[in-house]
Length: 92
Image (cartoon, rainbow, N blue to C red; front, side, top):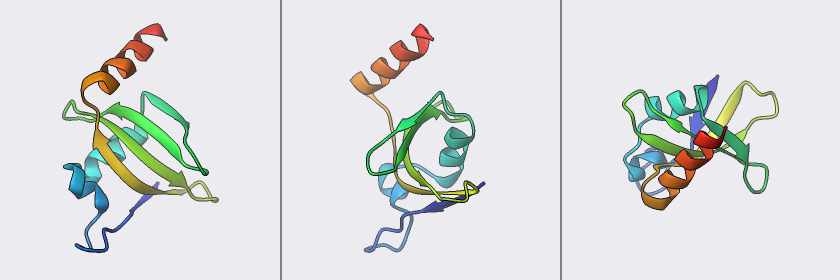
């Protein structure tokens, strides 16, 4: 699957860098997400654990042909949001 990233207009780098996330981590979560649910305005939200053990939330928009996605932000889950995710995972 092709993964494209929103580019920060100020730095011309992927916006995920502003959140301390790299492309490999995003690809890992998208490939093996623990949770993937609808977001707003046609987006989807994938939450999962990277190969390094970090938990990320990735907001993306699937392309119509389903062979690529456009990632807007991706950031690490911490605190209450991480606890809530872990609690939901235990219930399943």
